[in-house]
Length: 221
View (cartoon, helix red, strand yellow):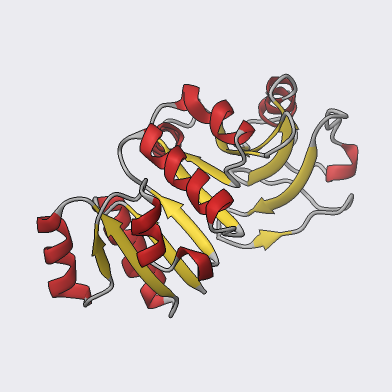
């Protein structure tokens, strides 16, 4: 795939390296000439110095043929404007944006950004890995609906440990997508799947229903 990344900070740099490792064609757009030069010295001439919010710069970057457009600057307004230009001027099929302020997520979703990644949620997810009492992690909102994808870790003393999924009273507004075992095994669950201690359940639910889902999966007998 041809992928454009706007923003050459630490996140943009490491993301680009990972994409190149997966053999994608990538170009970075970055305002800072020194950052561009540093990346150019390490990764080659796949960098354009310029403002990712300017149509002319994105045209130079080849936005008209991009499969994916990713913005990871530290300024939400720039990320949103760049995604809007990519989507509506160049008809890029998939836009992905970092959101620095979680309160902006609703606006990004309403204006058609395909995937929104909250830096706050990323940090919280790492904190929650160290603090087991915080058992629910928000992964992303689903565009065009009031639903979201969440991860819930089942504590060792939860009542559902050892139960088959078909016997667990999952709320009506929630759907279990898959279960990640603590040994790294990924399970697509059916009614006979047995829930275990420290399993991470990934589910689609509503903002209103997430507390009920968490109570079901983490409640102590």
